[in-house]
Amino acid sequence: MASTCWTCRKTLKGTYIAACMADGVFREVDGGGRTLRELVPGPAPKKNGAHAVVPLPDGRVLASTGYGKSFVEFDADGKVVWEFGQKDVPPGYKLDYTCSIQLLGNGNRLVSTYHG
Image (cartoon, rainbow, N blue to C red; front, side):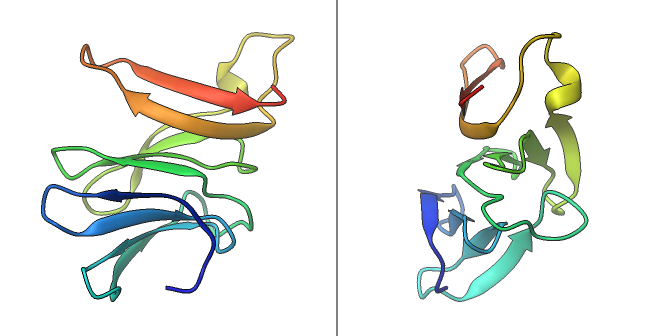
């Protein structure tokens, strides 16, 4: 795995999932660094399109896409099942670079953007 990774987190099953910014993918690897799967938040990887990642207990993954300008949730099969993007923000606000995403105890998601 030779890529710039902004965030890397350990999953409950002992693997690691990383936001690989330069490649625009979220990559799950084993302890030896062998790629197990890649999560792509669109039809094709977008350079600088992966910033933060949070593995969830049910196998899903929350992620922010950096210059992809969205926050997404992947199901255990790697399909995008939720997305928050420009179309979801009030008029007058813009998403320029989506940064951090966290799942709160009550199920809400806390997100941050840069230059928004």
